[in-house]
Each structure stands twice: as C-alpha cells, then as structure tokens.
Length: 207
Image 1 (cartoon, helix red, strand yellow):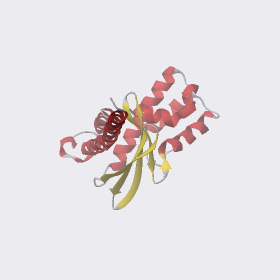
Image 2 (spheres, rainbow, N blue to C red):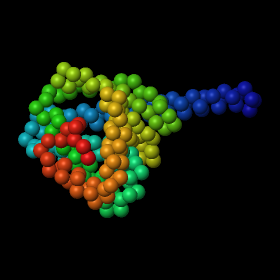
Image 3 (cartoon, rainbow, N blue to C red):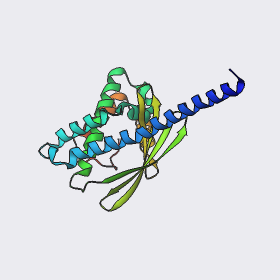
Image 4 (spheres, rainbow, N blue to C red):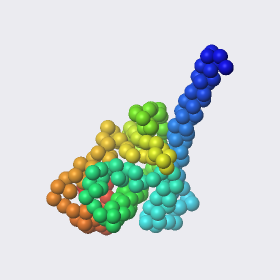
C-alpha cells in the first residue's frame, strides 16, 4: 500500500467516524424532543384526562425514565454533598427529589395551555458534552432553555438544564451546600418530605 493510498483510507475512516459521531448527536435531539412531547401528552391529550394528578406524575416519570436517567442530574446538583450521606439516605433523597420535580411539573402546567417546545441548535461544549437549545412558548411568554448532556456508559444523559441563563443544577447545589453547613442527610430527607406534602410547589420553593 502506498503512502498516498494509506492517507486516503485513513482520511476516509476518520471522516466516517466524524459523520457517525455527528449523526449520533443529532439523533439526541429527536430523543429529547420525543421525551418532551411524550411528557406533555400525559397532561394534555384526552387519553390521560381521567387520571389523577398523582397518576399523571407516575406516567410522566415513566416517559422520562424510558429515555434518560434522572439520577444523573440529581447527583450533579447534589455535588460533593453526596458523600455526606449514607447509602440509605442517598437512595431516599434521589427518590424524594424525583417525586418533587414530577409534582412541580404536573401542578405547574395545570390549567395552562399546552406549551410549544421547539429544539434549536446543537453545540459541542466540551469532550463528550453537548448543549441543545430550545424555545418554549407558554401563556404567550417565550422562554429560552438549554439542555446540557454528557456521554456516559449508559448513553447521552441530561446533567443540567439552564433556564433563562440560570443553571438548575447550580441553583439547587447552592441550596444543598447551605443545608449541609449545619444540617445532615436525615434533615434533608425530612425537609424534602415536608415539601412533598405541600399543595403548591413552584420555582420559588427552597430546599
């Protein structure tokens, strides 16, 4: 094989690898759009109208977890505080946070028109990390959301959501950092349980 032939083949292999990588990333947009649409369908389509709020939360959870691992984003938000809890506390916190997020999502959209969600540009922001832009129109207001994903052994996973330039993970990590300056894992669990029984949970709710 001549050097010219080898260089051509090497270039071709690299080109195919790059194309496959880009295609896999672009496919993630379809996966994300599918998750968003499926979750909204639970709240807005006639198929689910007879369900209670709790049942809708369970159905939304099923749609989300069939595509992404919710633990990834929660653990990213908890950060170094994860090691301050024992195994039982870690598992309980993960479960309680999921329940809170799902409750806030379903309650937050109750009585509102179905939002329009359009995914935009996909950008590589680091090694094995991408960012997908989205525009959400809800009640005539427009919101700009970024979904940040990283490639893991389990595939591409959402590790952060940036809403109107505010990182959800960083925001909650700050609150959890404040909690652990004086509190414990058991205290955090008690606080999450207390929040879960409240009728109203919104963006102003603090941990």
